[in-house]
Image (cartoon, rainbow, N blue to C red; front, side, top):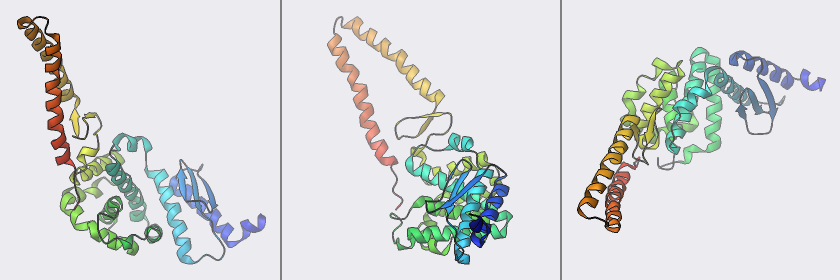
Amino acid sequence: MAADRDSPAGEFKRVLTIAMKTIAQDPEVTVAFGSEQPSLAGNRAKLPNVADTMKASDIAIVRGLSDSFALRIANHSEKVHAHYRPQGKNARAVFESVEQARIEAVGANAMPGMAANLTAMLDDRYRRKDVARYTDRKEAPLEDAVALIVREKLTGAPPPDAAMPMVELWRDWIEDKASAQLAHLTDNIHDQAAFSRMSRDIIAALLFLQEYQPPGGFSLGSLGPVSEGLFIWIFGLGAIVGPLLASLFLWFFPEQYRTLFALTLIPGLIAVAMLVPARAAMRTDPS
């Protein structure tokens, strides 16, 4: 074991762990090296194993992963993230990816060496995913394209070579839909709450509005958010008008309860008939 600690790989692990604790501003960070998938849970990180024979490019990838994890510990609040996280699957995927782009941009802008490590990590990730094989944007993951364009806006760095073709499939569509929102991202790079609100604006501009619910509002099916006031007003009005109309009917047609019950079905059927085309119209096709 002592020999492992004294080897070049052992020394690299020791120095990398110290660097992670420093960047994360958390002395309790723990780092494990192994063959498992790299991951971060709280302040516990798992990184790829390191060997004495590793190439410089492989070392840069491991350093990029460690920098990414440490930056997330230092610059990300899960409480804030959960508060602004959208509900829709696609909207949530974009939101998660854009937040990670913000976190990594904070470090990349502060330290050129870290920027190079993060780029090496991203390039390796997209080479492994083989995203260059995509020729149609319907197949390419939108969340990755949005995140890399956001990274570009925040740092000035172009997408990694391995991801460039995928980003270019989406670029014109994304920038056409959300150019105004993308233009002001750097104003709030260090303010997670403000940046999260801007991320939601980007998602809305990309026509995911029907998929997420703003904090403090209700969601009616897939028709998007409504305020509590409107929600209460509509249902309160129905609670008042409904009994009045029923009483008026029974005044003129005593004991016609079956007819009254049948009539109550008509508004519901009309509502359903109106909702079906409305929901279909709000489903978006990126093409």
